[in-house]
Picture 1: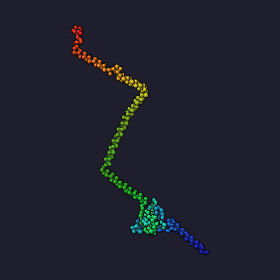
Picture 2: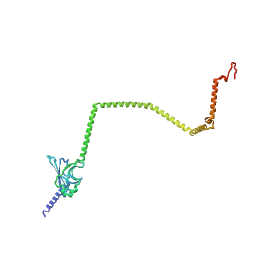
Picture 3: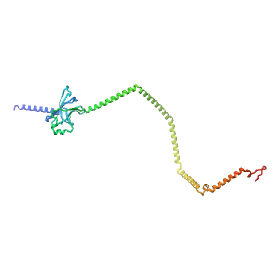
Length: 306
């Protein structure tokens, strides 16, 4: 029993060491109770990738980056070792992609499985990639890098346009085009000033007379309107209707053969009598002109001879 205290202290120390080991691995994201498969890949540039970074498949964490080795004498200077859950089978053609993990600039590894081969790899273990194998690698630019690249492209285009504009302005200055343009602007400004002065003169001199004439015309229209209001328009129209009836009666009498005017217009016998009378009068006047002594003779002694 004299060793019981030492045994308790040893057991407690072992438990503390286990808890410390378990806690450190838990903080690193390593589950010590599950077995894993390890793979590695080589990169020219890891863009700030760190150990314990997440390993993702379709956005789901399946493992972590265990170790990063570098050899700057080689073309692909960085070797990245990863471990994933043993129950995940990687089919042939899987590649290790270095991607941006969020907007803060962190990096992660994404295992990109070939389309249509996941189930076949599960069914046929012979087509799966073996533990410890090397995977092909690829770098996928993040959102910030894509935006930065597009922004730089637009900035370069804008700088080119600005250079072209500056060169064009230099050409304009060298050819005195701007000076002539300014002279034209000054001339147009002077013309506008003259037109403005003329408009002011018209407004001061002619517009009041026009307004007065308009007021007079409106007064006349008001007087005419008042006169029309005071006029007995129904009585006026009644008199007009009566005059029209009288005219219609005259026209009716003229068309009728019973009236004097109708007989004068339509009675042929009256026309013949008048015509015969005119003919007789014309013959008489002709005879008087030819033989005036036949009708009247005045003697020397003032006596008439028939």
